[in-house]
Amino acid sequence: MKNANSTFLYMKIANNIERQIIDGVLKLGDKLPSIRVLHKEYGVSVSTVQEAYYYLESKSLISSRPKSGYFVIHDKNCIFRSPKTTNPPQEKVSKDACDFFSNFYQNSRPQGVANFAWALPAPELLPVAKLKKSLHETIRVAADGGTNYDTIEGSVDLRRQIAQRTLLWGGNLSEKDLVITSGCINALSLAFMATTEPGDTIVVESPVYFGVLQLANQLGLNIIELPTCPIDGMDIDALRTTLEYKKVNAILVVANFNNPIGSIMPDKNKKELVKLSKQHQVPLIEDDIYGDLYFGKNRPSTCKYYDDSGLVIWCSSFSKTLAPGYRIGWVAPGRYLDKILKLKRYHSIATNSIFQNAIHNFLVNGRYDHHLRKLRTTFCSNSHKILRGIKKYFPEDTLVSNPKGGFLIWIELNVKVDTQKLHERANKYDIDFCPGRMFTLQNQYNNCLRLSFGMVWDEKVERALQKLGELANEMINEAEEIQVLSH
Ligand SMILES: Cc1ncc(COP(=O)(O)O)c(C=O)c1O
Image (cartoon, rainbow, N blue to C red):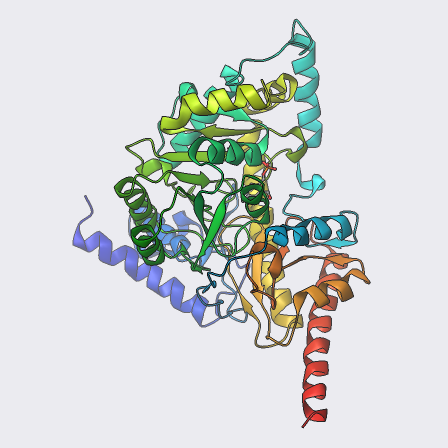
């Protein structure tokens, strides 16, 4: 138990440091004194200083780097207003609304000079050599060379490793609670099929990852897009009202570092969400694919953590952290386990055993945590670079989400900028990004865009961001000129 005195002491230290950061005495990237130094200077215990640093970390003012200490991550010149909570219309949409995404994929060029479009970590940031080693070892020791069908639920060794990792967010899953899937999208697909029938209705955040829109459309599901806050995620009050007045068959949520809006749902909202799902007996499908990519001290919790009725179906994969091409994901189906096993048997029989075992080999040799630490540091540093770039190059009234994890940022531009047209112009300079319209079935987010910062940040990327800002400014100027001429 802390006594009032030690609480006072750690807050005193934290307040002093916070003031220096806000006043710009301590600047972005500055290293803070070590815990030992402050412990001597203030004459307090090491844990009191640690407490002060934890507090500042929770306010996203500082961040620890492995083996290097604590650094300022707050940039006083780089404060943005965040976009407002969204307010999606609830109109019926045409069946072919999803064509937009297919067209985008056809036109989008992964080889572009600056690819802000793809929600993938750049291959240069992935442990390719070590993964190759794991693959070689896997093939060498497999008696059948990986030729046989695996079990439906997937490699028990890999499931055990994944189950162990749930301890990081307070989970206590065992390998029996998990089924390996072909990436997260396959986990979501099985979850939808296990909980809904064609013609049923699901609720999602708005904006929402376009893969979900396509999938739900394909399965004949109606979609209700709910208001979503760029900081806290799905609006729980709006969900409560929807559940009261409409027949909903499943809820889908990306509670941690949402794609595309970057929000992270506070624990109390996660708890409330699970409570609502239980109260209305509506399954909650939780897509936690970005959960391991936090910038703060601890891995954020999950909705699954609060689940005591088996209604939460927790889905994820290694696609955003390790190897999207290996197509290895998983689902913890709760009370839908038998249904999901059956569906997996019908649809795919088993998952590729070589890649499951290679990832198990990578994890069991302790390579994953080291890799994740590096990746998180890079993404956190990229997030500062992209924010600084947007501040410098984009129109002044730009609104920006400020993600605390993952590698996606949501931007709302002046309404005069149609981001589909901006996309066409940017493509001419080999710059790619996702226009906001991709993340909804309604006619909205036409002045929004999603940028990925999962790349190696270099001069080319910086120049591309500058160009994008210039193009946005150019479109505003053109619109204003037309307005003047028409008066
Ligand atoms: C929120 C979300 N869920 C699922 C997926 C698909 O993941 P996977 O490649 O593991 O199927 C993505 C990929 O962008 C995503 O952003």
